[in-house]
Image 1 (spheres, rainbow, N blue to C red):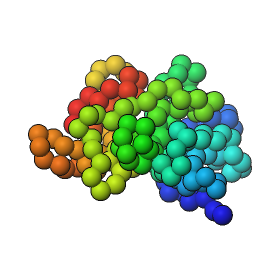
Image 2: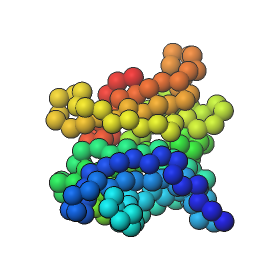
Image 3: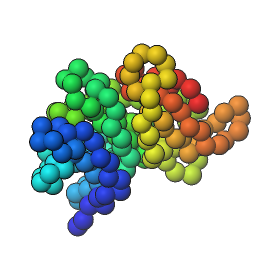
Image 4: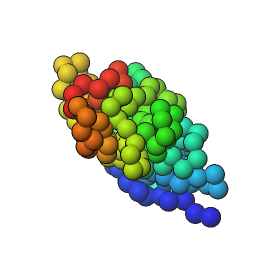
Length: 173
């Protein structure tokens, strides 16, 4: 048994106050159940500081994608956005994305896939998340999300969305 770890390693802020940035590593297929997870490690020692477990669906590839974002829960620490591109919560393999506290691992809010995001040949609310500067004037960062398959005006194509981790809203595509 093995975990499919290090799908993406992402350098983040210094969470433990030692002056060295931490790093996050996703394991999209962990444990015997296939549930993914994400681990935040000390940049100085490599020790695991926090483990965030998936949404509860086996083989949903939780942790396959993630990025840091500015503080979303008011504790002064940057938080994490983590994707599960094959989660079934909103339809077969439509995917699920959550904003999680980097202090506790608690789910702060979800970013719900828009209705046009569909699944034709696999995961739809896809696997790349990119941190963006503020685009809507609220003083908080946004995130760029990719949907491999979306039905836009009757045409199935890939679409990139700009979303707000602060509200969970899709701002633009």
